[in-house]
Amino acid sequence: AYYPVIGLEVPEYMGEYAKKNIPDYVFILDPLPEFEIDEFRNDIQDQLKLQKSFIRVYESWGCKIITVPLMSIKERADFILSRVNFNN
Image 1 (cartoon, rainbow, N blue to C red):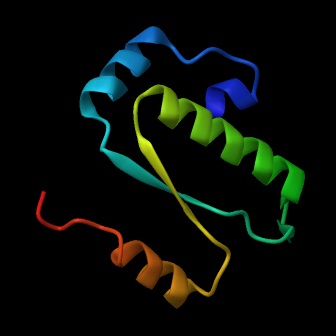
Image 2: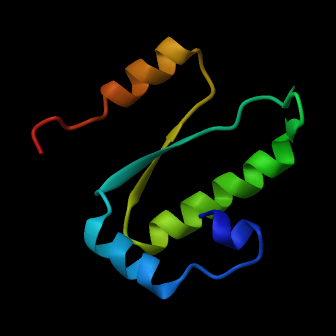
């Protein structure tokens, strides 16, 4: 999903591998507020662009997207665990 963000096409072999090995669903977390750590800065626009790229790529591979809203870490964990099917 990073390839399109930096202007590259996803290599065909990666797409073929993913289509055969990708899970039925993926969790995409809503972006955190802007933050800066040392030399790394990630503003909300960058995060939204990357999130859209992840969604496009995973949907093109046939994955169901489950968006995890912005909440506390515990709430996010509970949200995910409540939706995971442990019978697979």
